[in-house]
Length: 273
Image: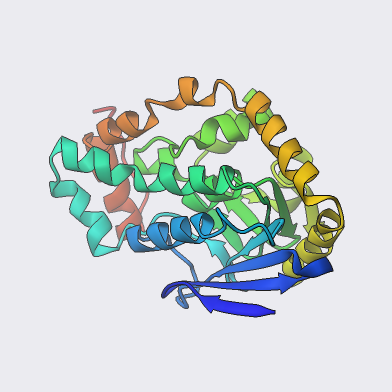
């Protein structure tokens, strides 16, 4: 096994499984919640891109900490909070960090599997649905809080969720922002493919990865490409505006109220302005 610390928050282990064809990407900020700061987004994007010329790895398992896959975008991060003072051009450029991350993971030639423990929220869900498969601990949960913060669910994740769950469940998951999606619900809705006992998500994801790693790597990669191109052919057309929608939503009074209520730990009072 070969281990490489790619950055402050990301560590990559290569050489697992049959013929050493499995890699594990560990994302852990050491803060117990694994929030996605702008710097974390960059580091996770770099992690995905580091496999571009890797012909020895055919499966990549992505996992967070033992307590959290990710709490989503870090609303308390100074760089993230600076968005409030950016002009529209700078804001649009900064908002591309998230879509760039999810696109980098979706476009990887390797099969990708998310191992989810604890909670997976907002941007964490957006990252998870960009992967090929998800294994979730039975005591874990998901939540999509963006609308409750006066934002839209972006990073081109709505089409990905739609492919997995269908329109009604996607609306339910996104619009009912305070609703926790239990692991059992996530499994029944098609949001995750496999459940694991608490603390065993990585082990079960690795067992799944080993089955894939025993298959012919080139055929696996070509099959993934074919399925993705067919399934996601219209996604860019349908969601190319979500960055601009996010930028527009971030300028509303409701967004300011949603974030203030979140930080103040109180219920929001939305006005539709």
